[in-house]
Length: 349
Image (cartoon, rainbow, N blue to C red; front, side):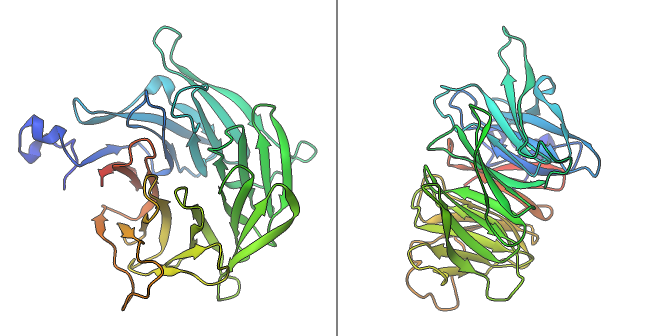
C-alpha cells in the first residue's frame, strides 16, 4: 500500500497512476485540512501548518491524476496568523460563487482564491470577521462550520463559551449566544437554521435560530468534566450525529429523537480518536481516525440492533503515525483524506 510517489516500488507508470493511495509531504506538521467541492477543481485540498509561532502557512494542493503527483501551488499558498484550527472551502459545487476558503484561529477569515492564468494567480484576504471590536482580547476560535443549505452563514465556536453565527455577505453577526458552561470545542450545522455544539462541559446541545433562548441537550458524557471535542452531523440522515470524548478511544453515535442514550458506541480504536467524518453519499457509513494511526470505516446500517461484542469496522487503514485529521470528499465520495505528521494522504475507499 505504498504511496503513488515512490517510483522505486516497481510496476509500470500506468499501475502507479491507478494507485489507491497518494501521498504529499509538507515542509511542516499538518493540522487543518479540507477538500474543495467545486466541480472544476477535482482533487484539490487546503492544508495548514501547526507551528508554535505567529506566522503559519496554508497551502493549496492538487492531485494531477495524469502523473499521480500531489503538487503544491506556491502562487496560491499564503501566510496565516497562528495555526488555523479549521479550514473549509465554500460549499459551492456548481461554481456559482467566488472561490473562497475560510479559516479559524484568533478570528474567522475569508480568503479569495484567484487561480486563472489570465486574471493572475493569487490569494487575497477578503474578510476578517471579529466580533470583539471593543476588547483587545478575543477568545480563540476552536472550530467553525459553513452552512451548505445557506452559504451566507458560518457558525463559529470559541473558548469563551459562545457560538457566533455570521452573515458573511454583509460581514455582520447574525446571532451570538452563550452556548455552554465551558469552552465550546466544535459546531456543526444540521440544516438551514439549526446547529449543534460540543463543549468541555461534556454536553451536545442543539440550537434553533428561530428560538434562540432555548437549546436541547442531546447527550451528556457519563463521567463529569469529560470534554466532548468533535461533532459530526450526518448530512444524509440528520437524525444522527457522532461525537468524540477527549482522550477516549470510543466514538458515540446519537439519535436526536432519543436524547441522552447513545445508539451505538464504536470501540475498536486502540488509542484516542481525533476525527470523524460521515460519508457524504451514504446515510449509514462513518469514518473515524485516531492516535492508533488507524482510519476505520464503519457500516451503521444495523445500528438499532444490539451486536454481540460490539460493532466491527468494515475497512481499516494504518497510516505511518497518529492521524490527526480526516476529511471525506463530498464531490468525490470515493476519496478520503487523512493527515498525520507532515503527510497528507488521499485514499480511495
